[in-house]
Length: 116
Length: 115
Image 1 (cartoon, chains in turn yellow, brown):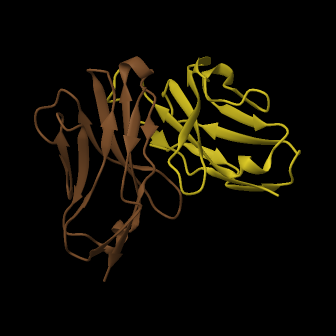
Image 2: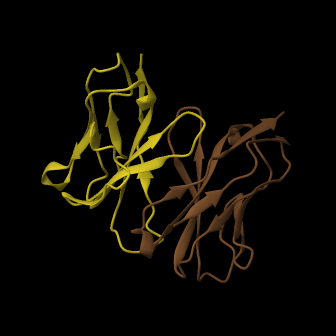
């Protein structure tokens, strides 16, 4: 079974530029998550999708971050314009269903973003 | 609100010895789950072990076991017979129905295994 795929793996941009990350979850997984992991910290949830609907985006900085999950499969996370503090690893995860605490999430390899 | 605290920023352990990584949590929910993930330098988060709040027995997965003490709100990870490949960051996390089953992570513990 293929895991969660993310691209690109690394991205370097200058501040005020825009950037987009792509995630392909495990086939059949209805729930998709985007996390931001700043160096030296644990991941922080940015947004959670159930199929193609947003379940929770309370921690997404909506003035510059946007995300979509068209057709309930792939997802794209965009930052426009980027700030220095957006430098982090962006992790995508997916899970089979939502609705119980033991809902294991499977993580992709992440995209390491550096904003200069 | 959920909160996970990992008080050990870094730990050393001798190869083949056991090590305990601490995790305490705070939640007002009755039904919740506790997870441990390993993050090697490659960056991928690897699921290790899960404990449900209603599980009476401590979870075990191979060399990993979770020492769950509900009254003390602690969920420590025990790694037996440490191997060099165990050197990584370890994150404790929790989820609950009332929090939409999203994972809340602690700050992590860096484990270094000495040969």
